[in-house]
Image (tube, rainbow, N blue to C red):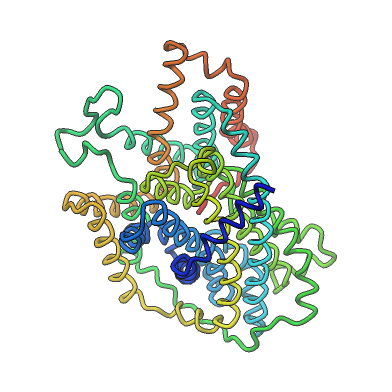
Length: 508
């Protein structure tokens, strides 16, 4: 009964006129972010954080945090849908989790069934979003209550598990992913030490006494890094856009898609809950499942509607599932939720077990807004399928200056410092070279966000144990988390030694 009351109060918050506007703006921008190849949800969310701080500047702190996170979350799950548009029409995935959609979506488009494919993607996304949100409502409160019983040793081990999970599933090389995680943790140590008051790695630069702001790093590496890639590699795709005739699927299409949508939603939701194994892996598993159980597996890759319905449902359900560890445990399971976590911390809101107790308005307002946002996405995307297709045609010469302008003004508006603009530029250059050599950026951002909390919990635990490190192994829950973390990294390594092929990916 308490959960229902909290949810109703969340709807009261989400239905305030300006929060409705923020939710609508979020899903609209998110869809466009997903449609534009290369930008992706991480870059979209990072770019908009400084914009939300300006838009909500006149609101009380709690209301400003709620409205900002409603908009940013809208961008996240809106981008999950938008990525399917380019996959289907242009055979160019808007972001990584839509790669699988292209396998059958593009052949459908070439057969003149692009409208049906896009509509099924929208319907599947809507149903998957609802299923994952129901799961979020049912699991959020119990999980946060369990998490409240954890001490600093358990919190430390859980965060180490979160880092290992994302590092183990990010990039083509686990070694490179771990290097980036360590680099992120190292960057997190820069600044004045909160306990001793000693300046660490600041090199007597006053701007570094506050530490490195995650926003500057995230916008630089993701958004400007992509700009440098487009300029230097001129990787604009000149593919031919498929024509859209009817936007409505047939009764047979709906019948063939019904079960794949449900199965994809469940696969995506449970994969999303596990840190580090979000949307891309979920859509891949859903596609394999549908092909395995199909009576006509030969249809897959030639325009099977099930090959669109399952993966599209899975990647949207995964984005809802990924919110569970973020909100209840304070563990971001994907790069985008790491950026969302950083945004919450900017508003002095700590995600984790105390979120539902200290800031119920923010937590339940966000959950309720995601229900509303999913309805908006369906109403938005069904009639505007043809309009969004036009966004693909935006020339890079117009798009690049817009991204650069938003990046520079956004970071300067928050930091008011030329030093941070130079740091932004340096991060952009670094982001380009790192991604060019297959060094995943998401673990670096996660290390930067989680670093201070890992250090804080480790110090608290060692204070309790008078400096005895065995506290992390003596506490049963902490020991379990550490064992899982070690296995998470060791199993793919052992499999590789035995000659097995290990599938890894950079998760959004």
